[in-house]
Length: 392
Image (cartoon, rainbow, N blue to C red; front, side, top):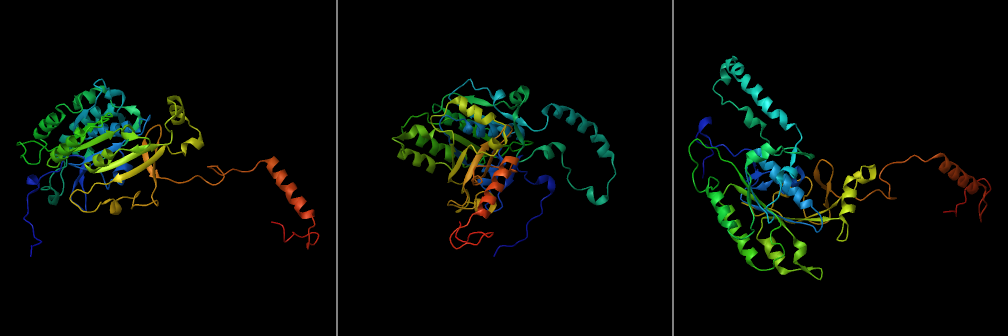
């Protein structure tokens, strides 16, 4: 029988979790945010550290790139290490990553004011019972689990350069070796930390993995990547062009094997369709009328949920949007001007209108005329002045 008493450890010697992380209360798994609060809710609180999230991207749409941009912006906001693997080496993060909702330009001035007021707070006299408690630094309080991003803003170039994101052009050649080097350089859970260093998280992005190659080398790549991340403080998000792995409208068997090698799998199915022109897609996203603001842009299908350190997924107990399988919780996503959100899909009001409408004067006259005609008509078995019981 194990005892419930634990050895008391001083506050200064306790191991601190990495910034912008939290624990899953059911599986004690360390979680990081994807940058989208609704997607964190669907996954059961966030993306587990050491896990792999696969995003099956839709054809001719860039919604998966929007989720990857959120993931990269959250890495910069939390101070995590960022590694991006993309087939296009000329990707410009300064024009793609959404910025914080608050003004980043005032962050430097706020830090100066905090440093000036540090002397005053140290000299302030407080109660004797609070003197021995550890002090909470202002910078640690500013780091949030999930920032509020605005798609209409962009992160300043100096902030992106300071984060030092790493780019790798080839998708397979030496990618595992480079990721292994990054993991061993301070992100492995098997090696102790250097003195006076703080643990942080490594975020890895693999964009458009596969690129239509139907060979089995991608299976070996995912198998080794998953085993490497299991014993590390790293999280990986992969976008996968699943429409390239179809023949006559039927997915190839390799897609199911790829999904089995990932910890969580979601699919974005947009309403634009295969034959929508880019001008139509942009026009639908930039419309500002009341009717278009209520429209959804596509469905979100959940094929697999993370189950690290647990036999069952925790989303049924922690998620508000998705509480189980079946058609009871149909999820859809919408892309507004400032944010990307996932919601429960609701059908529009019967009749095709999305708002209540007061009838005009002409409609009132027509309705009154119909009522007068109905009152004056005499049918079989009816009495003048009364409504015909056989009239439907």
